[in-house]
Image (cartoon, rainbow, N blue to C red; front, side):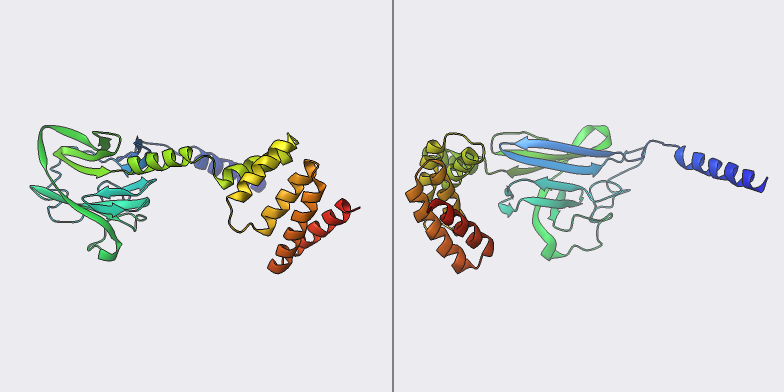
Length: 280
């Protein structure tokens, strides 16, 4: 009987754990993903509601640092460096802190993005960028805090924060022109050493045309000022696969000398084995 009661108790506890009631979150989580030009931007935040309360100058006091959301610090991530109010903000993740005022807000991009509430005072060494923006009063109530990215152009956009009857916008620019110009220059200059090297290595490993692989590895090596022992090793293997045994032996000797100088025993061993095979 005692054993039966224990079994029934364990079953009841298991049911209670697995049947936890789920209810809507008072401030639901939200994630915004937006591409501006070639830059990816993500904003993670929690969205409180007005719920009949006075928000700014009430729930959120003027002049006090606010985490710009509920539950946890609002986080923004940039895939590239961006510019805010003339300040360079490095690629990475930041907390968005704000200091609401009646006519203007201070906006801070803070390197310490993990955590819940906002600190009483900000550590200036952790303020990566700061700007002050004007407040616009809108003629209707926005019930749920909304953070969005709008006015999107190739090289700029705005982070908009709207709640209750308050609207602010934070302009920023992204390095689209620099990225596109760099890509154009690279394309016009032709494939890089890494491109040729990777292509030649793929042809070797996939058993594809070794003559083409040899042409590509030669182009790669011509762009490298001081080839490393492992690069010379790869070149020697491609030469051997293309039937150029003399060239393969010459490159293997160079790779052997370089790997001995670098103290890499594995490459010393592999080069010696290849030389013994090719010199028969």
